[in-house]
Image 1: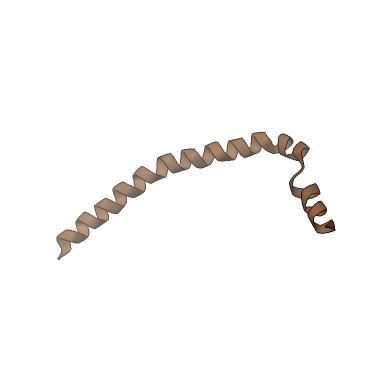
Image 2: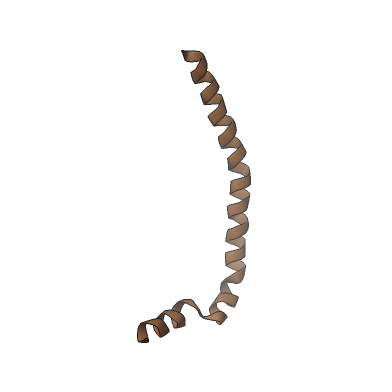
Length: 57
């Protein structure tokens, strides 16, 4: 039971969560932005490579 209490004290501390929430939110926003920007680019590049490869044969 001591291990559970140690875990809760270190990782489930509400005060710590409230303190780092702005940093977590900023990281989430950056992750969404990167996904929105890179996904269309990856799709276009992938389709371009696939079309060029289909003309190769």
